[in-house]
Image (cartoon, rainbow, N blue to C red):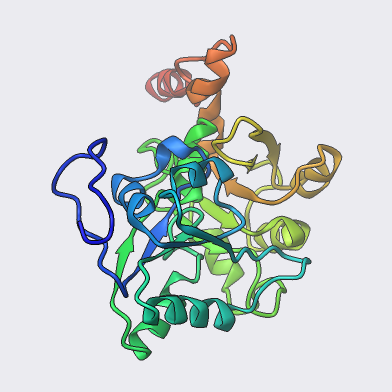
Length: 288
């Protein structure tokens, strides 16, 4: 490698991080073990790591000795750097000839504004590589025992953000169409407007009793999971002191947690083999 010794703890065939390049990498939903080999390879070679608020700090232990770590986290309601300033920072570091790893929680192209940063690099003629990560809406729910798809529940899933560029509930959605057309809805950044969103889905035809799962600090040792219903999810989340970052899942797949909560099983929870009670439903259908 140029400028650093090869790390023999990593498999061969991984790309060399060239000076003046930016790698846009996803760090996954939190658990450091969910980092990809490409992202780890970037950490081991980078001269600068520009990281977000949702990147678990233990991941930074893998940064190459002597490299710069530059915090660029944005959190709602708190003083945060502007997106344009972050993009300009990446460009400036790259033009200095540094290997720049832009490390973002989850996947950089799933509500992570990685596309905006990449387009800024294109405009500045800075070469870049995209390293996908495990998005929290899939990996975080999996750690809670909630699959986003199951053939007995759904053949489609919708991912949405709980606020738009103004910070308000998205007004461009066809909430009635969404309520009627998507059997499973996974929401990012929805806690602030959860009561409003739940109301729109109920007004669009969803049942107040539909299962809802809320996963806070997904995949970390501090993970919290609240099982509730669409009609009471906002008040239940407030009572349980559930705070962002959190993923909200609406749909029958939440009931599968009774059989798929593998982390709970490690702590002694008894799982059920038929959480949807499909055998009973089939017997009733056969009897009819």
